[in-house]
Image (cartoon, one colour):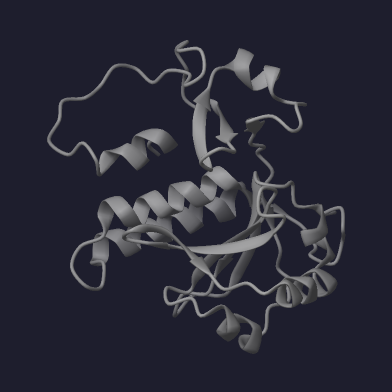
Length: 214
């Protein structure tokens, strides 16, 4: 799969020649495949990080940059009823939600051809989800998210994922969407994204505040 930043940039530079090798966006050192990302809290964008910069910010708190982890949990017993989903008013049936430290609350967004769009998420609704699914109380602020897949003809899926996974999904729609309905290419790419996520994620219980294995 293409690097996150490269995928995000893909739609901006169509027709341009390939750029130089990917580099750390803090110190400009080369980074290889599988490198880590730092979330820039100033604009909410993941930045590619070399191993040294990743270590530097691994335990930092209150800084501009936060290291994005690699925890991926599949939650087969997650509770999200149809009435709660309807209250979110999400048109594409895919959503991610996370704790925004700057806003001081949980926020929800969904991917669209124009990027990530905020969905209404009332504090009472999020509190109800936390009561039903205590694993949400352990979300790392800014860098971890609940990802929900309720696409037609697929089993509903719920995961805890690094926030850069969500940005990658948004980039898939932005760079591959065609026409009014997106076209088969974009939906095949979305399916491939979730297939890969199922393979990588560890099975866990939404009832556990520590994300223990189910």
